Amino acid sequence: MDAAHHDGTAEPGFRGFTLLRDRMPAELVARVAARFPGTVQDHREGPAATGGQMAAPSMAAPSMADRVGGRAVETLLMERADRDRLRAAFDRGPFLTVELGEGADGAAAPLDDWSGAPAADHPDLPGFYLSLTTGTAYGLQCPVLICDELVRRGALDPQRRSNVELCLHEAVANAIVHGNLGLSSAVKGEPGGYRRFSEMMRDRLGDPAVMRRRLDIFCRWNERCIAIAVVDQGGGFDTELAPATTGNKARSGRGFVFMRTLASRVTVTDGGRCTVLQFDR
Amino acid sequence: MDFKTTTTGDATEVRLTGRLEFTDHDRLSDLVNLVEQSQARRFVLDLSGLEFIDSAGLGMLLILQDETETRNIKMIVRGPTGDVRRSIELARLTEIITVES
Image (cartoon, rainbow over all chains, first blue to last red; front, side, top):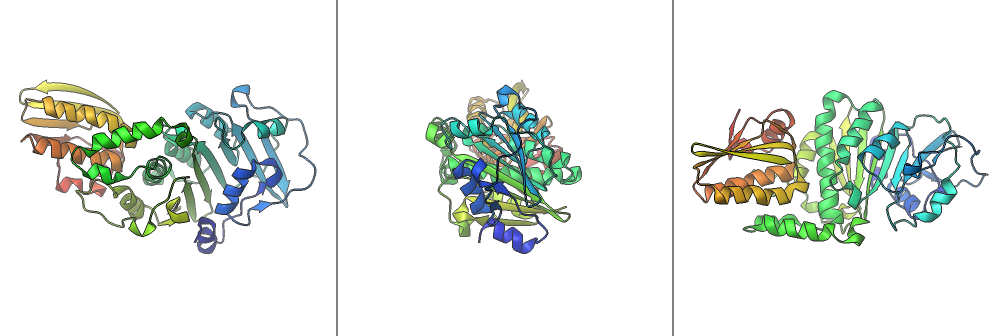
């Protein structure tokens, strides 16, 4: 069962996502389409009107709005993301915010194609999507940024924020550490294992191929609930082993227990590469 | 996460600030070094200035508990508030770690 199918079944009120295939890096479109089938539409008409304001050069990011069948997608591409740039990006209210990263996703080509696209007015879509490289996501505390944005867009009640942020943090930490960095917590259970774990983490953080792996976060909501999908590009894991409970002395597994306790629903799909958190609003 | 250490009487007191999370495994080694070098009988972790702790951070508290226990040092977690207290209680760590308010 994949994330979109799950959401669509449980929450028919969610609006679909729309992507314009000819304007997105193909690899990225494929990834989004795989998560949310039926949301990618062919767009064979002419390009969007030119004009409008360009993004700041440091963002290297044209903003684009386009309409297909009354639906729209606003996208912001960034060469390199950090906290301030992401906040600035979110201020522009894009649907998709994508950090291209160095040498990833054939970054150079789409930048040319996208420059000059207008920052046109667009309907507020009930959702947004952020794609970061692992190198950026590590230490960025993107769950804080995501929750800030969910609150700002009125999707998340500030009173409920703390629980959502902890769950999202745990999902993101799992995606980075166990997913993209490929580290197992098993070593932590050995005597002095934390030192070994620390060394292994430093080792992986120094591997450019590992740091280029993506962390994708999809958020969408309707009047009743918020769904957040966290997707990594790691090796996955046996989802049967995700603990629903754990002993209070256990060295690991507590993150899943937090998620299962605090979220309305937790679904792991894609062989452990995608965790979907659902919260009542 | 940052920390400051003071030795008062028979206790080594460590005041943590910021966020204790999965990116802080290197800092854990620093804290364990403090335990290893400590001559005091009590090891007090002052969490009143800590803003956030995740499941990895809670695991670090348990490792410190083990490291102190094997050296007959009493570990005390002091003053967690807000989200930090919520996470500690959610994980039922109060059943195995001494937590003072």
